[in-house]
Picture 1 (cartoon, rainbow, N blue to C red):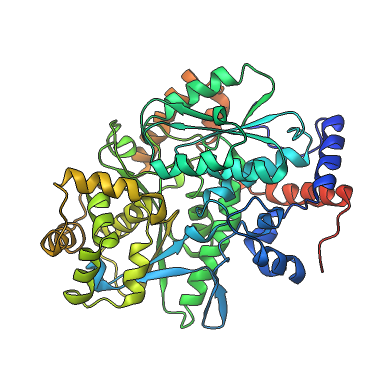
Picture 2 (cartoon, rainbow, N blue to C red):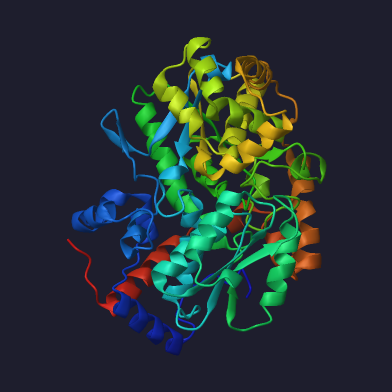
Length: 497
């Protein structure tokens, strides 16, 4: 399967006909990308049905909730995604740091369900994926494969999760409840950094023609889904914040991961001139220093450069320590830590609750945003938008492990030390503003994964170097929507008006 051949027409009429019959029998209508980008365009009754669906069940109505507005807020008369804004008392910088919350996405309570839907929907609409025959294989470091399994359950097809065995216990607990067979959870060696081992497992599975590999790291629909949906949500949030017209969207920050979420930065740069900041762990500084290693900022698998990372449009790389994210998870998630934030730092209940809900990669993104604000000497008129891709409910086992490593105690003195060291005492170390040569260096790193290991042609690999390639991709969004609309018409189930 060539990742550069984006779905644009029906490729197998037989599979397409079976897909139509399958979706009709299950009463499934698929949302268009434009509807997920702006849920107000979804018919009101369909929107109400999605709101009424059990967010923790494989209910087809949840497909129309795969967006950022499940807990929408009103901001100056504008409906915006749920967010928290961190006060300077927390960040130590005057810039306004705003965090979009991915925990409100249905079923997996993480935004990766959007990437999973974005990768599969165009394949369904073109007869490339047969839900009556194919097994959908979802290579991941934890959340994307959960999103894929959730989408597979809704569609009534066979989903297989491939992820490192060292990921949080909560991820595996969720998967065990959702897969149709225990063998559909494929544990590969290692932890967050061991993406190569995931690829190796998928290469073996791909020998079986019944397995359909949906590799988020090389699936351009993942990039396009975030460009369209996450980018639009972040733009709407900034417009709501900027009612006065005096603010500047200085940066968009996201973890490297599959690089899909960074696609939203491309849109924000086009619309507002925002810098694009890639966060990565200093324990595995691939982009920063051509480095390697292990880390625990779960949700940003690395040690390689994803095929869908628009490297030559990335402006800054910010390295964050997993010691900081682990310590702050304890600060935000423990009774002693929350008491310290309230009693000694004077934070209000809303802010404390918001901090307590951040997952490890969300904390990492916040730290990268703070580093960026320090590096660029941003002011109170500058806004940085970032994302908390999932929530703290995925990490109790990780907190328990970190607490045990600290001797089983975390009191207000420990809380004060964590706050002072990682927030107020933070710095702009391991932050690199990329110039042309830096971008070319990082881009070239991807050669070893994609050309030497994964068989991408040098010509295909290299044309991603130029922004004309990425701008050309965005035209496929309208094509995807047309194909999904056609599929829905053929299925013949009218959306509620």
